[in-house]
Image (tube, rainbow, N blue to C red; front, side, top):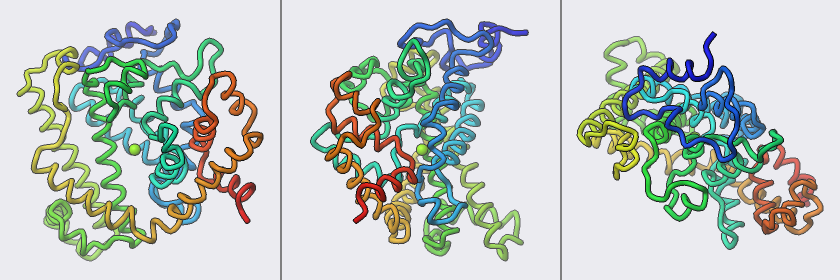
Length: 383
Ligand code: MG
């Protein structure tokens, strides 16, 4: 039987010199005796999978409102699982810490509110004069404060490195405020998960877009990335010309493979070019070391612009999310007007923690699933 120290050194023996290792971790905010049979980052992963915010991902919209628009589309939980699989593949191929990457990927969307991007916009709008709303900062708040499961500390008490997953786009001011070193690059594992997220949503949004008939294959053929991928697939399987359903899946699958391959080789090239040989080298390197080649980045960008204009903002997609963007603001207002509607533990935060009521209401609404928010709207706002 292996114990933690042995398990960690076993699983880390093959890691690249610039990978993150458990013994190099900056640890947890509240010191704890570590688990007997699990490494540091394994324990983070388990805490994430067992937390309430993780379970609620199933009932949160990714792009389509699931209970209204069919059960085949992705929700935030299935998206999270796809990101995790892609991220683990990338980590293993680059000899990075797969346990840390898994924890980061499983946690990456924990801060999202109900109704996807529209919900985030609604909350950001009502919070404009009170510090705004951002799902990355909210992810940190969920993990650090709102999960109440342990007697000795609030939150999940995750390691510094797993928490770093939510520092994306943070200014050095904000980093410092949340307990991170001001001007440091995150480990490669953190950089990698951001790109795995992009690969996952770009490709599965294409698939969901085609199946829902919101976007057409003809329009996609006008773009290099789709066109070239389709040509490759058809040259190997001519029968796919006659089978639309299988053809879409084959193209999307191949596209993931192309993006993953490009990311791996470009990242390896950048690491060699920058002569990075250690974690310290990663931390002090200015530019992002994980990334796509220039050619791929251009193609990917064209695809993302297309998806932005023709999918996310399409009337069919916005039909429900647009409606709920407005209704979520009404739900927010309903609690602000009558704070007694808030559960006691939430309302008391204004006194105990000195949080402004607006922030307390925002935190509460952001934690809601789509359907819970719908029930509250019916209850308090429906005329
Ligand atoms: Mg995501």
